Length: 137
Image (cartoon, rainbow, N blue to C red):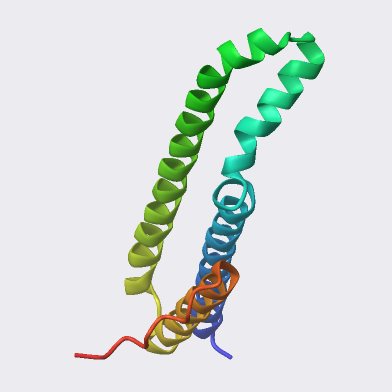
């Protein structure tokens, strides 16, 4: 094996490794979003209300007065998490786009398969039907 071929092989392995890491980070971020925000955000206000009531020994009047503040805070935090999740997804898409020109055609095909698989898994977790296959131009 020539030295140039060894270097190409090493660079190829590193690129595939980086693509795998980026995909793993994206999957992890999406999973964390699903677990921590989307499926449980409605409980956040209830949990905060219960905790404050117990720890601060709030009176029923205080609980009623603080209820709108807690609800507003819960809604605002949910929006912040939703926006943050979108920023993470956009950043990962930009990373994938930046990596693509440096991949071989075979590696790009594998990356697309990984992306398709990831979309199916996300749809399955959300209980939605799988996305329709994209048509090639």
